[in-house]
Image 1 (cartoon, rainbow, N blue to C red):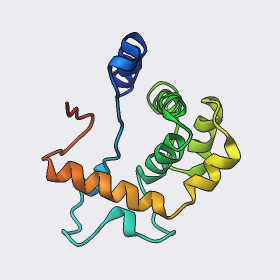
Image 2: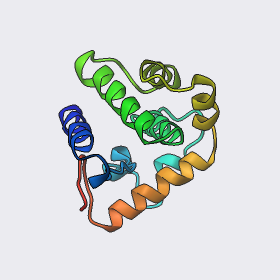
Image 3: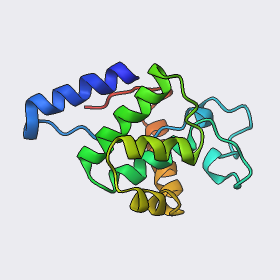
Length: 141
């Protein structure tokens, strides 16, 4: 996934206005869940330790600061996870990635905690699942 994000950022940089890359959330733990169709990862309470929702919430929070901010966040997040092997399953971890990416930390934290973010993640996931997506990365052109 990291190499894909690096490649996509280069494509977008090279083509400029000629291409628009839009990241969407896909909850792998939902897609791979054995909890039944009624169980939704994004509906679990604060005690639930998710494998990926915090990084997805961070992605949506970063997107609210603009496309460049989001892309920088994604690169920092994937670098932390895949190069430095950091555990990115907490707010502190994703906030560090946002800081590395140069995002407004106060706004990031406020947006991260906005309950509407989980609704957006759910919509993105349900849309993708309806399109037959089952893993990441997936490209739709």
